[in-house]
Length: 222
Image (tube, rainbow, N blue to C red):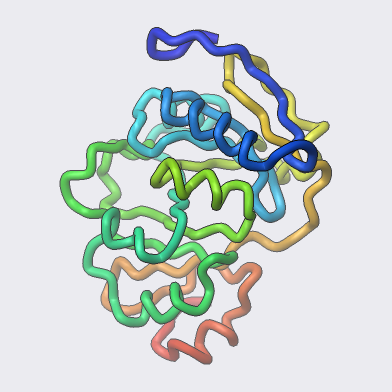
């Protein structure tokens, strides 16, 4: 595989075997060199790229068959990283971050102005979807890479891929695949939009509305 003038041979790594930090180092090196990798989240496998490598993020969208203008989600290592990529963060949003990150809560926010990235929307949406995942492997990777753009390994409209054996990508498409067997079933993340004057529940997922409103009552939608 050649990408950005560099050559790399795809390899599959079972993170349940061997030293986890060795796997983390391989993933970090591939991402920092501008490659796309596959790694497990909590309940599915995801394509991942350094959020600031435009070509890598674009390649992710092509692999999924996304329409133009679709923005990838961003994952970060911890809540303290959020101010570097998002602006105008409300107190309500921070309360939910404090209580549900790491975890299955995605929060839509306005990005910091001047970020040199393109998540797929050419920065036209003035919105990013951010989460701190609880999957340990990718958290360790994030500590060393900074923000990553992610997308499901399943094509648009298909069910998420939970079994590492079902991943079907070539070394032309991804630099490395990190597997952890069959991942547990689980609901998608709950999504709340804080880009407006009030929080808006976009999708009720793994975290029920009742748990959200117990902490922040001023939530609209669904």
